[in-house]
Length: 308
Length: 159
Image (tube, rainbow over all chains, first blue to last red; front, side, top):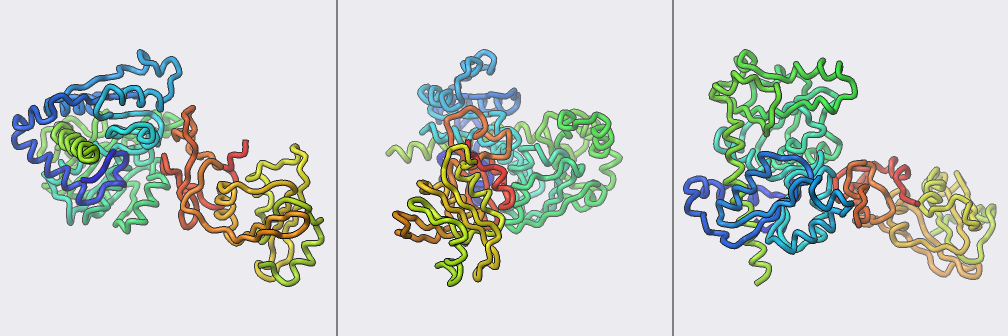
């Protein structure tokens, strides 16, 4: 992979993705062998939004490579509270760290930040925009369970504001994947994601009812319908129930169906599904560490190459 | 090049001594061009506008003549997107000293605001807007938001 930063899944080729997933698989096979690989490296964690899995898995990934992390802490306790710009914050933390991870509530924040720093920067989620490292671990999980070619993937939930969906849809265009998007009409894919899918010639269909497509799916990727997106609580209640799955719903699915979710879930997947062979969402979350180890290692490798 | 009989018709609006004539604008774009140039009359500029003027080439066209004003490259870039057939004539002492056909750029910088209110370019950050030019619109280079050609005028940043 020849990238200085990872900002969007749209910048990843099939070869880039496979290189990261292959290295993640090597790491996964013997994680202890990678301890010490990045001794002395410091990773700056810049999270302007709450995060559990992403922040902790980056933290763990760096430490498992032998490096350390520094964390700007919550926005409330940082200089952001005093009105410091993002541009200044990343320039300051760049002075302390060999690479940066940025999560920010504004779309395009990570792209802008790369214009102010020279160290590798990874987008850990920018508003409703992109979340490319989530996508890499999604693809890793998908490859392990269903493969990445000649598969039918259903993506269901909040497709409009769901950054994990936007990144995943873009990345899947690199593979032989039929994509089915299932959502209420009010939460369908945004224009920019549709544009990229159309330009790539992806095989895409949209639905409002999962039953139309469930039996064809090899993977069902569920995201949370976000109550806060609905101006009217009644509108939310009307649609939310239609986008929840339980074991009865899955009777119509293939036995081999892989059910994924970027987490956190609320009630869109019933707990009883956890006990079935379909459920891969906790495995998916665990895969965040080897995948982020692989990505950080490769970006740092590129940075070293550039300075030689 | 001007249409043969366009020159006579242009006389309907007064000649300017020094400034810019933007000719062969798509009909209906003259007011958008004034918005692009930040001209609302309050600055005292001498401006002549012809709208829906008959044209052999375009059937109907708009013309804008602005005294003592030349266009920046960013303004020309946006002009090329909203009216690709336009020509720009630079006038000195009543003569056309330069006539140029505009070219569609790869990107336009600094003259449009992003319609995505949550885009980082709308936050208080030291960054100019930048839009990549698509076949039928523009795309914010930061957040990816797409602006169709017919929406561009709404987002001109002329403050």
